[in-house]
Image (tube, rainbow, N blue to C red; front, side, top):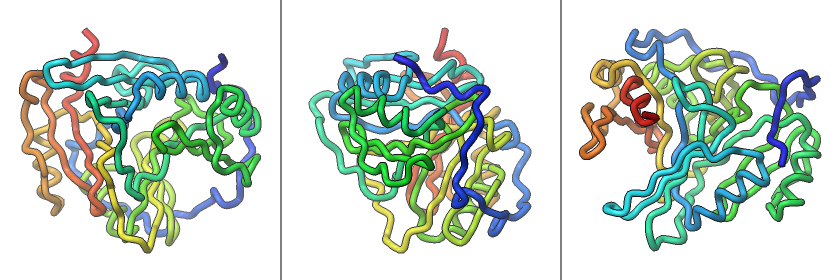
Length: 287
């Protein structure tokens, strides 16, 4: 099975992917956020073995690490395209809670984006491995796959070091959401229009970004989506920065009981949870 390698390819792009700065502004954020990096997205699945098989066979991902916590009755599995250390590659963290086989996915967590050399070939790979394509009407510009739990993946043509290109959410007020991600989390707004924005850390084409898509419908987070994790040098300074920017910290900074990793948390204007993880503590997970 071949993974989605993008090096050395000539890109095909859709005109609809071209946006100006629009609502992006140069907002000042604390120095505490300047070294942040995207780590992983977390969501819950009903059959972790079936999901692992789907992602490795259909998308060419690798199982990066796994942990089972019988005392708390859950299992985690991290998948992606390369090492997670120091935020080098973004990963997907699956959580299986013993005995729970179905979740309400809500309507706000839209999809994970995967950059592929050729959308048609990627669709063929999904189909040949008994995956599910729910929208192939935009080929060669994009296609949408759906996994066994109903989580969606947008396959787009592109050349990127880490093929996991974006995590996409619905938002009811795009201007307020841009302000949150810029000021509370220190992200750069790369592109925006009245209905879509792209934000992140580092270079847009060399990292996983957050994509915000305006919706007139009220956002329902559901109970399947968990959070995005972001590494930060100092969670105490990060929490202070969030508070000073006018947003509420939903988990006070400090170590997670039983694990010791220091974290803090906040929710965006539509209720999506973001956990900031101490960068050095995160590295200890690999020892």
